[in-house]
Image (cartoon, rainbow, N blue to C red; front, side):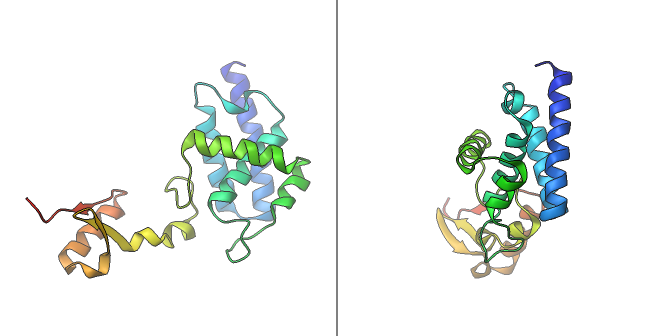
Length: 166
């Protein structure tokens, strides 16, 4: 598959995921799916070079959904994974296996800064913790000037830790 064919399949996958996400989830999911598809398209070995576009579109949506608790009724938005399979005519086992491969390939996890929804990033339980001398402590237990340093670092997408020993 040459670069033009990869770009064409990438565009098809984006169209399929956009259609589903905008109709059944929201625009933020469509954007996250598009970001993942483009990242997959930049790999040396493009995962979606072979296989049906519908399977890959379902896989991308499932992958993004699984790290953002889309299939958990206690979170919003919520849908059943069956809706993805029904929409694209795919089998659950195929999609979950491919999604596991994608997660491993890109080291995706819950609260991933690149592929999490805004709500997930805001509700990340790690936001209220920081490392001090190799111990995890609540940010609010630090002096105010140190709390401000944590806030500033994280606003720039950086993480910070403190050492009190010399």
